[in-house]
Length: 238
Image 1 (spheres, one colour):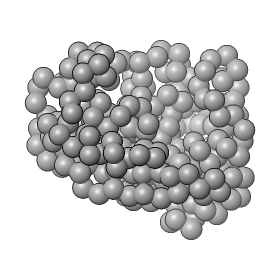
Image 2 (cartoon, helix red, strand yellow; image 1 turned 120 degrees about the horizontal axis):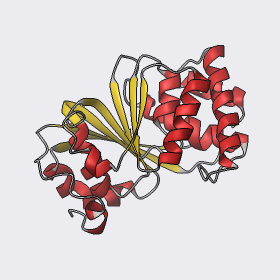
Image 3 (cartoon, one colour; image 1 turned 135 degrees about the vertical axis):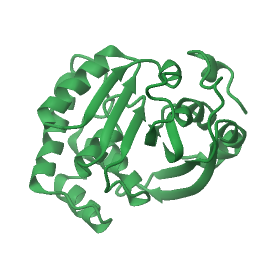
């Protein structure tokens, strides 16, 4: 997906990007490639693939959920900033908090935010499990996102404790989301969530399957969740 296709295809989906925003994506790409030479941020470095599989794919959440308002968004395990930084560029009003367990990645994100001149972004070095028990952040975000970080039952335990009542957890998955959903239903309910809608679509050009799962926070997450670091992955609730 070249830059013109990127802009045009997003516009067809109702997401219009200005020249400034297009310039920010250019800076994002060059910064990502530059830093990727010294640390492992992504296996995808070809420009057209980055625009399709990282930038466009990240913004696809906005085809099914309204980000065009001053929401507080927390991105768990964002790695090189996906999906929250592309969404932030497209919808500057949102406030973004990214939590990641690797300090090097936080360093990259802090540098990136300066290069992109982003406001209302913060980056926190922490494990998702301990972050979710932090009273400053627990049940305080309008939206929490997770993109292919872990399977649904695990991802729900890391993300739902951070969502405020009536807020949303948005899980972004590739193929086999239905199997994950069925296996994760018990976990989602245990953490106070309710599956509201599931959207499936194919990524343009390469036609691979993508799924956006919108989960509403309907009751408080029991205090024992998330469990200690590593436990959700070793012993998922299923």
